[in-house]
Length: 255
Image (cartoon, rainbow, N blue to C red; front, side):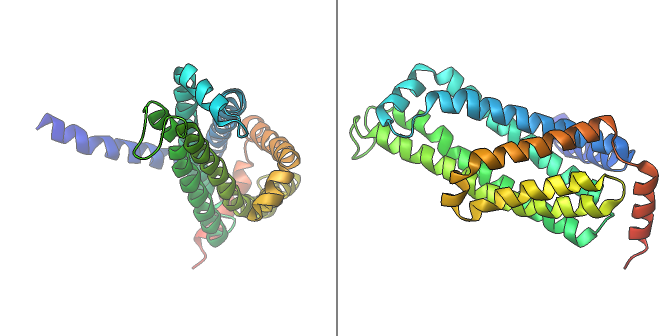
């Protein structure tokens, strides 16, 4: 009986927590979004820049396999960080929808869908990041020899990388729409919306992966500047609560 009660009460408690958060002060909501945004960026940079790029060489399957096997703990930590990153990004996407919904419900919903689709693709692609751990710990896998396993592992890691690139295109659509909402909101500065739109257009280059990877460093820098500006503003200034409530009240009267 106790186990049954616990099983059903946990989702209820979580749902109540989310409901209280989305109905709290818009300034509190904005700062929560900023913290989640910061967690997403920091963990993504650590997992990608300090773990994956250190261990993976896309031109050398044998070296990559050796690095992974020699640093399994670090590699597994990278996967964990990727998962926490995605959990934070999903939460941030949903809460940002609640913050921007009063501006235009349909556009905010569309941005939410694009964001969640991108998160789903990126999360699923991380399965291919984890797979080499299982493959490389086998002396042989079916018809594959031990010498072939590093090449197969690198193929899976390439799929993981390309999957994340596909997700960026969806994040581009999401970010452009969110930037437009910020621009029109009145409770956040217009220049911030313009920065967000520019970053979103940059991510849309991944509609052509060849172009996206060619300009990635520039796009990532522009997006990072926009992200830092957004995080800083939401943490320090939050939103104009009076204006947000006025926009929300006007939106509630619409059919």
